[in-house]
Image 1: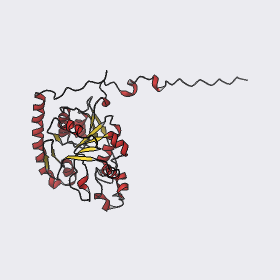
Image 2 (image 1 turned 90 degrees about the vertical axis):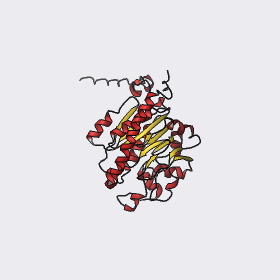
Image 3 (image 1 turned 30 degrees about the vertical axis):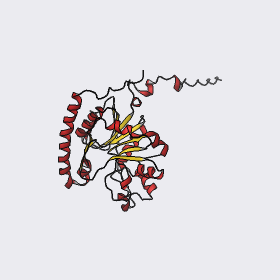
Image 4 (image 1 turned 30 degrees about the horizontal axis):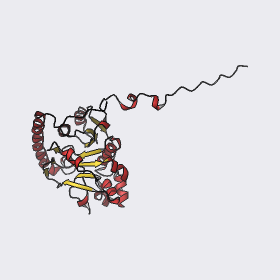
Length: 295
C-alpha cells in the first residue's frame, strides 16, 4: 500500500510591505500625488481643442496633473486623443452600450476622475474651455479656503434653484470636503436625492437632472459653502479675464445641429486666440518653476 503524498506547502506570498513600491506605484519619478491639482476633462471628439486646453493648463503658474475620460469619440478622433497621453496626462475610455440621460456619460466620467484623483483639489473643465489667465488655477486655490468648491455658475436650466449651483466649466473642488460630504456625480443618485424617476420610466425626469445635479444636491443637503468667480449663458461665448469658452460645441453637434455652425465659428475664433496665447506664454518661460517631486 502506497503512502499518501504529503501535502505540498503553500507557495510563499510576499507581504505587501515586502513588495517594491514600483510594483503598484509605477515608474514615474513625479507621481500624480506630487501635484496639488488634478484637472478632470470629459472628452468627446474635439482632439484639437483638447490638446490646446492641455497646453494652456501646463503653462499655468500652478501646473496640474490631468485626467481625460473619453465618452465615445470616433476612432479617428480617439487616435488623436491617444497621442495626448503623457507623464502628466492620463486617458481613460468609457464605453456604454446605452444610457438613460444625455449627460450620464459625462457624470460617470466625473465620478471616475474624482475616484482616482490623488491630489487635494480637482479642477473640472470642458475640453473647449481655454484659460485666458496663467493664474487661473492659483487664483482658485487661493480663494477656496473655507469652501467646498469655487468656480463658474451653471448656465441657466429649466429647473428651479439652478441660480445657486456650480457648473463644471472651470471649477475647483476640495477633495477633503468632497469626501467628507459624501458627494457624487452619479445621475442615478441625483434622481434619488431629488425624488425624480429615471428617464427610461419617467420622461418628465429628463430635464430635472443634469451633469452637476448630484454634486449640487449633496452640497445643498449638507449646506456646503461655495462661491462663484464667473457666470455663463447658453449658446454664448464666455470670454472674461479667466476663460474663453465657446460653450455647447459638442452638445450642439449631437442634439441641436441648427446651432452648430454658429458655435463652430465661435470655437474657431477661440482656437486662434488660444494658439497665439500659448505662443506668447511659452515665449516668456515658466510663470513659476514646476516643483520637483520629493526626494
